[in-house]
Length: 348
Image (tube, rainbow, N blue to C red):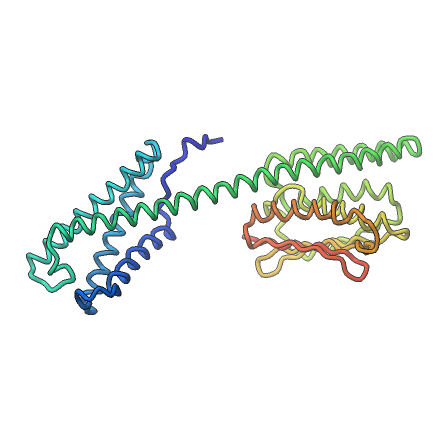
C-alpha cells in the first residue's frame, strides 16, 4: 500500500472539471470588474471580450503550469510549497500581463488596458491572480481531503461491518451442526462439508471483490445448510432472468446476509414456514436483485428484525455505495405479510 505521505498534497488541476472551474473563476472576475459600480469607465462589448480572452488565457497558463509542477511542489512542506505555487502564479500572471500590455501598446489598438499604466496593469493582474489561485488551491485542498476522508471512513466502516457479519453467521451455523451431531451424524457430516465450502468462499471474499456468481453460490450453500434445520418449512425459488452479468464485480457478502435475514427473521418465525424468492434480472444497464419472503409484522411484537436485518442492510447499502457510487440503491420494507429487499446497481 502506498504511504499517504508520498502522495502529492497539492490539488490536482489536470482534470477537466478542475480546469473548467479555474476558467470559470477567471471569467467571474471579469464579470465582477465589468459590473463594479465605480463610475470610472463604461465597458463596451469589445472591452469585455478582450478582458475575457485575457483572463481565460491567463487562467489556462497558470493551471497548466501548476499541473506540470504539482509533483515537484508536493515534495516541499505544505506551507513552503503553497507559497511557492502562489508566487509562481503571480510571476506567470505578471509576465503574461506585461506581454499583453506591450502588444496593445505596439499595435496602438483599442483595448480595456489601453488607459491603464504598465506597472499598474502588470502588478494588478499578478496580485489578483495570486489571490484567486490561493483561494482556489485552498478550496480544492479541503475538498480533496474531505473526499479522501469519506473514502477512508467508508473503507473502515465496511470492513468493520463485514467483520461483524461473519461471526454472526458462524455462530448460527455451528449451532445448527451441533444440533445435528447426535440426531443424524450422516446429515451432520454433510453439513460440515457444506459449511467448509461455504466458509472457504466467505473467508476468501475478504481479499477483494466478489462476483454476482460467487454471491449466488454463497447464498445457495447457506440455504442448503438451513434447509437441514427447517426441512419442509423452508422453500427456495430462484428466478434468474438471463442473460445476467455473472462476472460483475461486487462487494463480498452482499446477498448471503439478506438471505440469512429472510430465514432468521422471516421463515423461522412462522409456524408454517414459507418460500424465499430470489429474483435476478438485468434491464437497461442495471442489475436488479430482490429477496422476497413471508415475515411477521415487525411492529406487532418485539422482534429483532430492526436490529438484525437493519444492521445487515445498512452494511450492504454502505458497501454498495462505496463500490458503485450514488447509482447503487437498496431498499427494504415489510408489507402485507412479506418482507422485500431490493438492490439495484449499474452494470458497466
